[in-house]
Length: 445
Image (cartoon, rainbow, N blue to C red; front, side, top):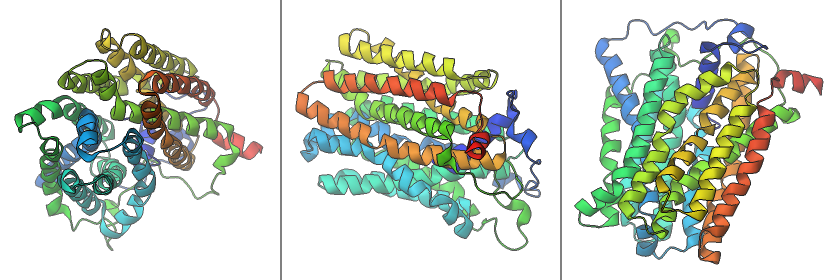
């Protein structure tokens, strides 16, 4: 679900290097090896702080979203929020990721990645603390945007920190980062309602309590604030991209059909993910499922990404075409939405599992980014194009679901929309999975 972001750029390149090459070869084969050395002898305490900072920060990249999904009905009632405005609220995360994520590399060059991540965690803390208590919908949206801004820049830069501090353990550290992210996502979905009940039933306290973990994530970065990595004489410690490539003219991604197919695929899978995070608990609650159980069901959906995020990229890189995987994930999504329409409460656990599998189109999209370009520079450009375009595509989906829900008074039309969007997602994903490279298509035109 769980950017246009450098984080995904790094992960896709690393996946491509670490797995079996396709017939067109890997980015590592088409580019010179990485030339930037590892930071010279980082002290053990600093390394431990970085590991702790990565884990705690990753845990804070989704609770602002999934905790709200678990209490969306209470928030709407408390703020007098219409279904359309609630839909707008669920569209804010991809908008913030698209707008603020692109500023992270520039901020990191000026202030250093650890300082920007530290500021990001502080922004998440402030946003989570103040948003329930500002007393109106506009203030709630503004404070949510503040927290999401912190998430956006941190999401971009933490994999860069992984690459810099652990260049020989990128895979294992990225796995640790991904597991922490999934843990935070599912934990917020599962325990927000019980926590709210334990705190007296006030939804404001139930949302604000997640600021505690965000505040804890600020602390490990404080001793590293002076570590900019761009100061004179600090060349070995500079944050680096995963693959160093010789200078070459930028590719015109808009000329590549594969790039467009991958961008639309990324956008449609992101649409499904944010609709799920924002609305799935409400679907279950309207069907008579208790609020606490609805949160746990969302947690089940989110936690499916932990094991499958490791399995799917490995399988994908061993196939000349990834279209069959796209179709399997899409069929799981169609089955899940159909089940939510026919028997939302009776088969709730099955639908949560199926949608969890379907949402694993996200790691598949990242893997295909790394496989659809030959050079490291091509991968970076394709990643930026596919993800920036994709997040923009995903913005209207959750808002439209809210409008349809309010106008129709039920979930029939919204679920029909979700299922209908799965059809073009499978179609463009199948096209994006063909064994082609954007370099060939751009040059052919």
